Amino acid sequence: FWSTGGTADDEDTFKILIATDIHLGYLEKDAIRGNDTFTTFDEILKCAKEKQVDFILLGGDLFHENKPSRRCLYSCISLLRKYCMGDTPILFDVLSDQAVNFSTSKFPWVNYQDENINISIPVFSVHGNHDDPTGADGLCALDILSSAGLINHFGRSQSVERIEISPVLLQKGKTKLALYGIGSIPDERLYRMFVNNQVTMLRPKEDQDLWFNLFTIHQNRSKHGATNYIPEQFLDDFLNLVVWGHEHECLIEPRRNEQQLFYVTQPGSSVATSLSPGEAAKKHIGLLRIKGRKMNMEKIPLNTVRQFFIQDLVLAEHPDLFSPDMPKVNQKVEAFCQEKVEAMLEEAERERIGCPLTPEKPLIRLRVDYSGGFEAFNATRFSQRFVEQVANPKDVIHFIRQKEYKAKVEDNVDFGQLMSQSTTEGLRVEDLVKEYFKTAEKTMQLSLLTEQGMGKAVQEFVDKEEKDAIEELIRYQLEKTQRHLQQRGVMTEEEIDQEIRSFRETKKGTAEEEDEVQEAFKRAKAHRLERDDLPDDLDLSDGSDFTMDIDEDSTPAPPPRGRGRGSRGGRGRGQTTARRGRGGFLCKI
Image (tube, rainbow, N blue to C red; front, side, top):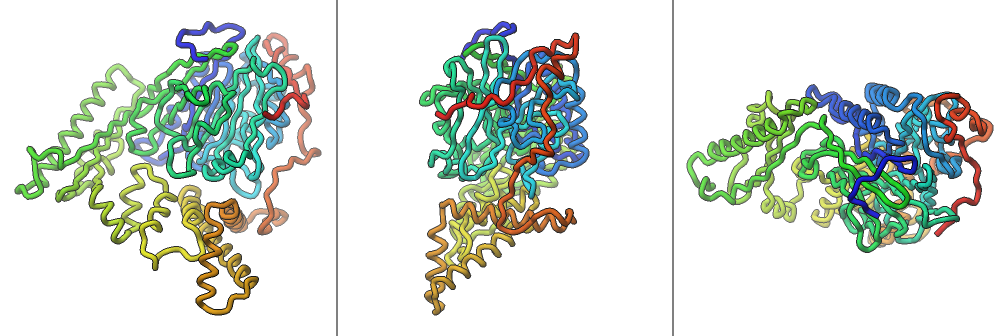
């Protein structure tokens, strides 16, 4: 299905701008890099308008923070209004039941069919792990944009037991497109659901072979643990193209999965959120053309992205220049590092010639492995030499000591040092927690909690500032263990210890372990909302499942058929009339 040749833009060709992981608001308070994400988002939307695309498809993490600042929301809304609203005709139809596609919305239809607003470029987006739904109402920042009529948030899953992915069915001329999507879900849970056949992708009942099947997912693609990723082989083989969000390295050229026979494109992020090698690749977005069952992906480089150069330096590999017992070796190493940084700055300057949109100061990172008896010099003082030349003057150089570090972990784990040495290299907090308890002495092992549960609680605390996550997990697990001991009727201290260990081990790696973590998080969120003085009639009782059922009486009536866009003369909106309520159009496979 992959065509290397160009596809003519005609009435049968979908033109879709594809981007993922824009991370609006990342470092927005930084004096140098504060506007980077907004500037690049402006470039992405401007490109969509110039290319006259049919719609924009975002693969999650539009926002960097789960609770974006007012400035961040204001900038996002302003840019969407600037580029995506207008009278340009929408030339494709929606054939599926939109009440199913957008079931969690108060306005369950695509925004361009709303008679109260003019949309020229629809935006379809799934949520990511940074801007995922939270709180008692299960809302996220995308829901605010959706309610305002600026984007179409799809791919929401309300059940933790079974997922049915119902596609948004689109047609332009003779081309039929089935747009599937699933917002970010904890990888371990989604992995388990795939293994247990709890994920179902629905397909049109008729003419299944005529549809182009496009799937958007926001999960770990690279393996971070036994179940902490989603193998491509889990996805259905009827798919034609998978847009993979969450991974920041730009691998936008579609690559064929030889087992499932579909293609995968990984657009990557549009901003470097960590100084790691994967972020150093040139950033692109994609212009996807689909005609019938054929596709073509055009790579479009982003010109407003700040340059990022990274190099590794292993001191032990340069015995001709310095050795640990050499007089004044630190000064020589420091001078050599300075030469490396200056060389990267010169390369950045050469590449920036003729690119006026590229920010002046690049990101520079030199990773120095000083294993083998060398000593680290003052990194802060070294970085200050380039304060006028780089965008990251506080962390130009990063020291690693691989061999000694591994040995130290085996002897005595210093969790604080583990955090400080590893977070900049892209490791996740929950992985660090697991590593800590994996290498710690027996006297330091957990008694009530599992390593996975504690890791997720720490991750919730760090990523979403859920301050009660760890405390609630401990309290909830303590209550449950006490009830278990009472039911078992154990009396002696030895029997209690044995029963606690047995009770803990039986839950590891099971659905019960995941359920306990989620219940603790619900309690923590409820406590936070109570502190925020929410209205008294909000039900925050412990143990209750948060529901997203829409009250039929409060749901605005959908625009009547034949009205709205199609009834406004001269705007070419005749083809945009909604086709809703087509029950039985989809079937399970």
